[in-house]
Image (cartoon, rainbow, N blue to C red; front, side, top):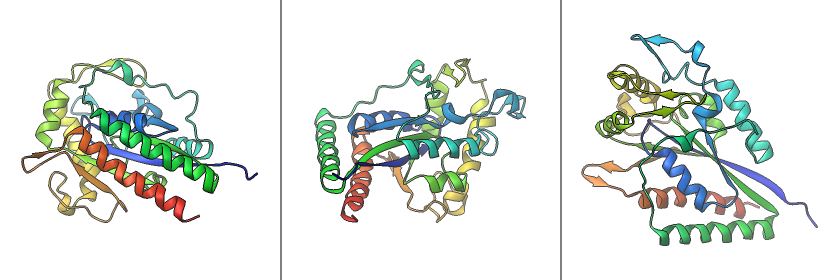
Length: 257
């Protein structure tokens, strides 16, 4: 009997702070068999003492200093090689208050069954056991080495005004160290927004992060815009869209054997 081979598929779920990527990751975890969530900022945020001071504030968002990219690459390689996250990866996400954005029960049940069937078929026909690594992060598409490690690349683009209102409504954030962080009054304007624009301007034509078309920097990037020109996608719609991409990928993987 041929030994079952584990194949890890790393799914990048990127976007600005408060764009809905963590909520999306949780929904996908409920749908995809053998799935784990990796929170980028929990896994490899830089130690507080090495972060720069900008405008008088500790800068947790600057793309070139916020994340220890070599350590992140090593972390994801471990996930890819073993199909599990390191035992010292402890998330404090459950301590952070988040808006409840449920999806339709019919949608979750249907998609969960679809992936269960196709993954069972791959075990039986191709001797492949798929493990999904859902990588949730606000700086997934700045470092080229990180980009290349991701098998699927998804970006949630949300209007800046919506992001601002969500961020300012967030009263307390629990950091990777377990400390409570409260944004100073102008932290969005001086730190968060400039860093978000800087980190993503090369992804969009003309550096227009809010409205520009995609450039070729991130190959195969799937752009999901939950709010555009007065049209609003529900979280059910967003999950459906992501699962279309994942289903196509896993079907292609099976047919290539």
